[in-house]
Image 1 (tube, rainbow, N blue to C red):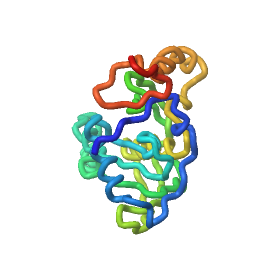
Image 2 (image 1 turned 90 degrees about the vertical axis):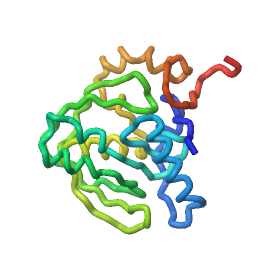
Image 3 (image 1 turned 90 degrees about the horizontal axis):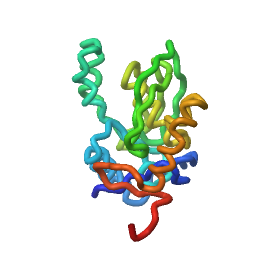
Image 4 (image 1 turned 135 degrees about the horizontal axis):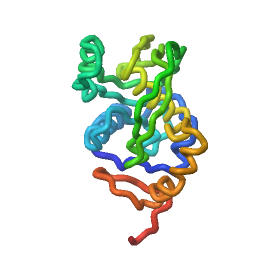
Length: 196
């Protein structure tokens, strides 16, 4: 089932999400809905808070990035098969040089900005079968993980922008929370007037 994506301004996007117990009700159904919602919106990642659930879960399928000809063959190969669910993740370390990349977010349609992040991330998490993993990722894979991880920490990519950039985007972000934005997928706007 395709779920509505929660828009900028909803308090759920600013909360630190809770750990998921292994007996979380209907977890496999919810996880399937997350994948379906992400693909429907043409996203490469989706965190549970973005569909209104404040739990520590995100899904990533970075394969669309594999077509980027500017990437090394090695990174293209890594991205081609990078499809995972991350349950109760913890970033253990972020290392390497910082680099800027133009990011967007399904909860903030029509806004893209350069965000600076570290190159490599080491993450501990549980997979869909609740098996514990510790893995290291670099490049775009690391960036998508960092972006989605921020969501479960109550941080949006716009929070990482300079105060000038934030001021310039203020009106646009206010319009998004009111539903005054075009989106190709179903969204839930926190300040939308009913009956419009």
